[in-house]
Image 1 (tube, one colour):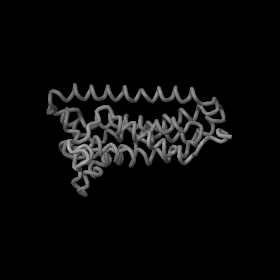
Image 2 (cartoon, one colour):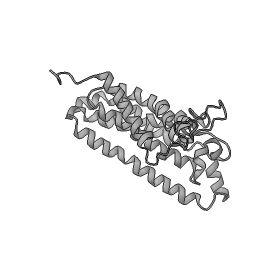
Image 3 (cartoon, rainbow, N blue to C red):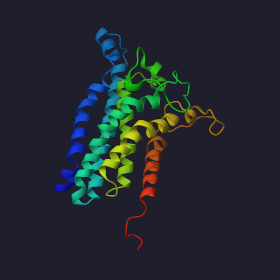
Length: 245
């Protein structure tokens, strides 16, 4: 176990630094704060925002469950890597989702006009004026965009965790970091945009789903995307050595 912690030392340090940077980055937009100071926030904004944040915290607590489950299935020497993976989910992947992932998932398509495929506005969580203009789907409730970002990232982290659990003790930690960056920046945001963010599946732009797709609990946008990534990884890895003789 000590050797595992020693090997994971530098990546864990990077993850911790990123974890410290994230709060300042996520709160870069000050529009809601200014409105609160000026007394211009709607009456329902505080209670709705508080509820979204509480819900996000409950989802984030799933990472603790993943840690216990995965470390319990691992040998002692790999326990440190399991902890490093959780830190990666909540730091490096979080910054990637803040920088581009949330914009791809929920941003409007004013820039390139490709809204049915991915969003193209609101990168780095930057927008001016009403957040519902930059993130149209986010306008369905009065909770602040920052709170909704936290909630949506929590599900991105859950989907990402599925991949690690299926490749337990079979890939190096560095490979997981690379995959986490790609997953949180591109794979999950585009898939969730189709289902949650006003993409072609949700709007019913094709004859395949004329009434639009409904995915209230994330069985497709969260679990299927994560499971598909896990299946792809397992197909690349192949069976465990010696498993079939």
